[in-house]
Image 1: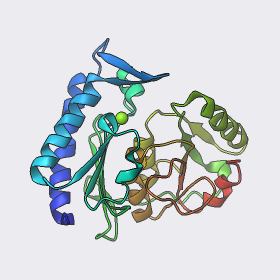
Image 2: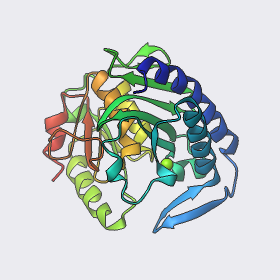
Image 3: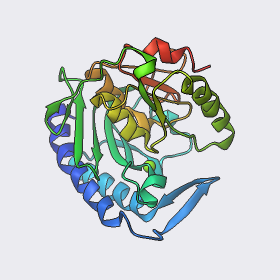
Image 4: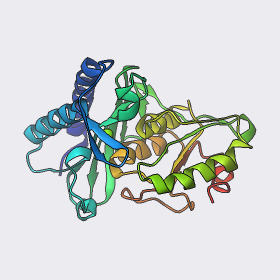
Length: 263
Ligand SMILES: [Mg+2]
């Protein structure tokens, strides 16, 4: 089993380097891209960073398994119970990234037997490096302790959500937005679930919900939010396993208030 201090040393070094690769592509017009079906797509930057991360992690931890967005098998659920599983999103927020918006992120988590043991997130544009580990009582951003916001009412809340890639599911997102829009101060779609979930951990957002995410979108961030004092469940308020597609993440105080509108 991979030791957590060793995973920490490796990830805190690798993620800023991965971010450096992304920044070299960022702002280029006409970034080479191909469709992943429907409206989803991948660029050369996603692929370059995924190759970089897997190569280095394999070198440091040759016996581990990988679940990375661009090389994930179709039935990746069978990987859920692996002992040392790296769950990687080389670039979350590809659409934002490709149009020169700053909301994009890199996320890497280490899971063991269905539980996230540690995770790191990097926001290259903002040079923010987030870290959380089962072995530590608190989570951090650039070495500072993370804590969720204290917002207690929907009327003063600042929330975000995201559009699923599966177009028919967007009706669900739209319905939840319509329900909440009449109750909250702000409800944004920035375009990166990883960056938004990190913002919940940091208290820059009070809550984030989504009806269809992948493990690489949520694995690192969910642990971070819990360590920052927040709460993470599925959209029915039930405890969430790492491969569960729906999520409500919040500062805790607003959790049940938001939950009521996700119907
Ligand atoms: Mg991605």
